[in-house]
Image (cartoon, rainbow, N blue to C red; front, side):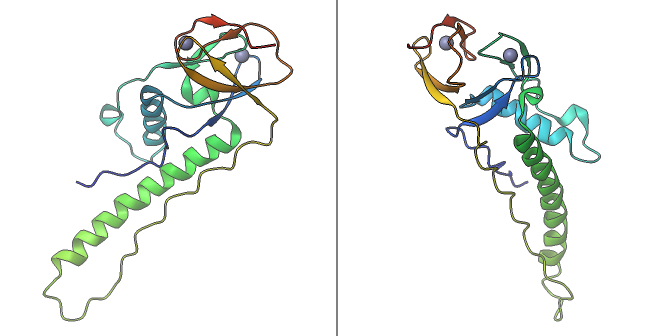
Length: 167
Ligand SMILES: [Zn+2]
Ligand SMILES: [Zn+2]
């Protein structure tokens, strides 16, 4: 069975929007959060078997208000649509593999009656047009992008510790 690259680039900043305070931020998802997104993509597949989904991932945490919830509830609209497109692509890849298997096993067929074309992966959404500024997180050696108008305490989405943005 071929594994499918979900295109969830590890070091890429991902747009987030808190479901509680509705403030925006960007974060580099850790592997556990990526597995949460992969799980969400699989959940949106038609006829997905829930028992085959990856196990539950870490919660996401809002750096502004500290709300924590499933990472899927923190997706921006663009990220959400990308996840839908990824699920549709996964379904198309499954169909492709089934057709390609038929094509491969029809090797003796002198006149193949169809071509199969591997479906193209969806394109990642462009970064949201919100103006954010990078804030270093001394606790975890990471950096997140926050609202430049935010001067309050910052909760680290990785360790949940509190830190203050540089003045
Ligand atoms: Zn919040
Ligand atoms: Zn931290």
